[in-house]
Length: 204
Image 1 (tube, rainbow, N blue to C red):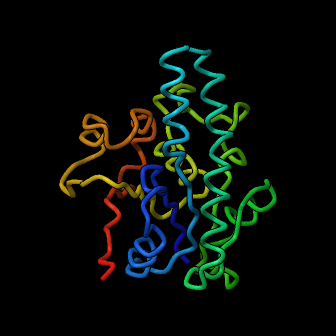
Image 2 (image 1 turned 90 degrees about the vertical axis):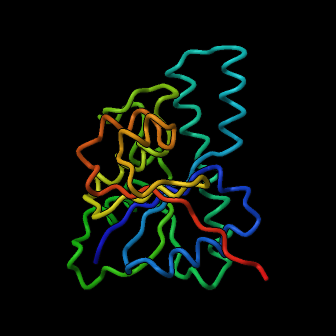
């Protein structure tokens, strides 16, 4: 089965009907074994502002922010797990769980359409060989692309709250601040990359 990495932007986390919007979007996607990367949203924005006022060591601040992503991941995963529309939902929070996911053949009979929430530190930490800059130019955009490379995903989808021009390319998205500058390091994945706005569904 197709393997897909989905980054859910941090700016979406405070959207009141996020689960409804994601459900409607996801229902219209081809079946896949999905791996979700969750942004940090306002939590990371607060650290960014603090660092602007009282600058710290860029590398240390970067890895502190990566560690903080576990909070938003677990919080959102718990919400998905209580919503029957998204069953089954799993959490990849250990190396064994990640290896089980990433090495399973896409043609295996065990492969199924699931939603798996990844704790980023499982595959991206200060000891990993990721080529991403250890500073503010790297966000969950490029981390999601790195995860897609590691698991040989068929597609990497970056879901945003802002409007996206479907005619644009990676260089345009970087220039316009739609995706982070570090994505350029993984430009070889551009043919697998999809960046789009998560539509808001009518609530009636």
